[in-house]
Length: 366
Image (cartoon, rainbow, N blue to C red; front, side, top):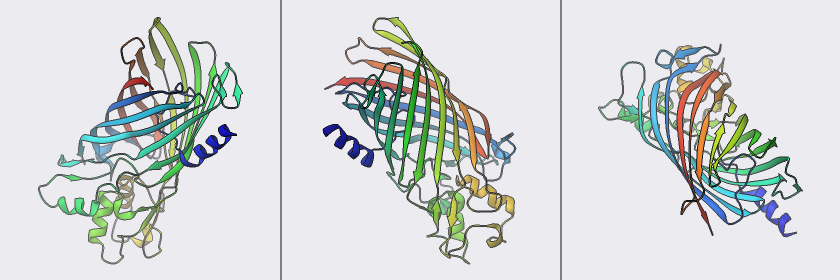
C-alpha cells in the first residue's frame, strides 16, 4: 500500500526531465545521487526549408546565423530502488551568445535561460522494478511538469533598444510556460555490456504564452502596430514529440573504470503555434496587409512558431548524437565525464543547430 501511494503522488506532481535525466531505463541506487554540470556550445549556420533542403540562415527571412555558450545543472537522487527523482536545468543559462542577422549585424544576442524540469523516473519492469522483476528488459516511465523560471526577455524593450547603439536580445531559448507530460524508456538487453534503448518524450504546453514575449519581431509589432492591440495576444505552443533509438555499449577498461559509447538517433516534431490576438482574430495573412507574406512567415519562424498563418508548417528534425563517457568509480568522489556532438541530418521547417555537449557527473551517497 505504501508503494502504491508513493507511486500515485509521484504521477501527480513529478516531471519528465530532458535528455540528461538518468541513463535510459536504468535508475540510481537508493540513497545514491549525482550532480551534473553541463557546459554546451551550439551554433547555427543553416536551416531546413519545407523541401528538406539546407539553406544558409542569413539568406532566410526571419532566420539568423548564431552561436551560444550555455551552462546547465542537474541533480538526481535514488529515492527508492524503483524510483529516481531529479531536478534538471538544461538548457541552463546562456553565458555568451552572438547573432548575425544577415547584414553583418552582431550587436545582438540570445541572452536567456531555460526552464526547470522536476522529474521522477519509475522503473516498472527491470532488475529493480516496482511491478515486474526481470534481467532481460527494462521499462521506465517519468511523468510530470516543466516549470518556467522567468518570463524571458521583454522584447518590447529589446525592440526599442535596437534603435540605439546598445546590444539587444532577438530571441529566447525556451518557451517559458508551464508544461506537463511524460518520458518513456525501454531497454532491450542483449548482454551485460550492450543494450538498445527506445525512448519517447511527449510534452504538452498547458499554459499559454503572450505574443509580446515570443521574440524580437513580436516586440517590434507590439511597439509599432496601432490598428490592433497585440500586447495581450495569447500563444498556444501545443506540444512537442521526441522519439529516439540508441545502441549503447559499455567497456570495462579496468574493474573500477568503464568507458561507455552511445549513438542516439532522435526525431523531434514541433507543431506551428496558434497565435490568438486580443481582438479575438487568429494571426493570418488577411489581417496583415501591411507586411509581405514572406516577411510574416520569416518573422514567425524567428519567434519559434509559425502561428495560424497560411502555410504554417510543423517543424521536424532528425539528429545523430554520438557520445562517449568514462566513469572513474574508485575516486574519493566517483566521477563521470561525458561528451557528445549532436548533428542534424534531416529536417523540414527547422533549425539545423550543431551542438557540442559535455557533462561532469559527481556521485554521492547518503
